[in-house]
Amino acid sequence: MSGPSSWSKVEIITSYSLLVVLASIIITRLGFAGVWALPMFDLIFTWAALLAVLGSFWFARHSRTLRFWVVGFASASQLVPMVIRQPVLLLPLLGAAVPVGITLWALIALSKKGGDRGTPRHS
Image (cartoon, rainbow, N blue to C red; front, top):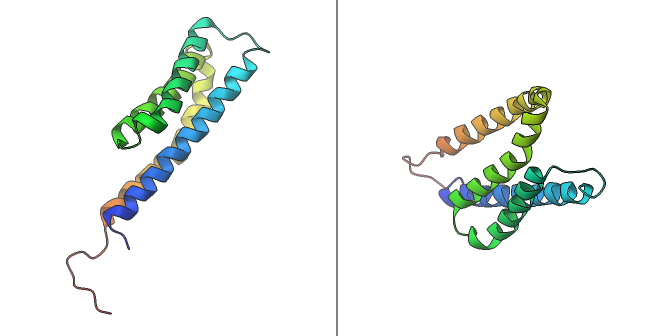
């Protein structure tokens, strides 16, 4: 059962899981903003990212592209300001990019494999 509908279900579950994880990270970061001072630039982008993530459950529910853009914006709005202030944080992020890249490569390879569509199936 490797039709397009099974891959779209995987994508939907994956993107919504990413959105839930991003929302929890952003909410946690805003919670710690009361303990440690968060620069105004970070605070504005963190609130914008939280609104985008929470809103995406409604406005991006039928659009894969919008969900990917929201995930990208929310991730970048949390990572880029920290890396600009502390460039040494780029090293662990690059290390984390290796398994993410391998996973993406495997998912793309599996999605292109597609099963035996040209051959008839015998029961």
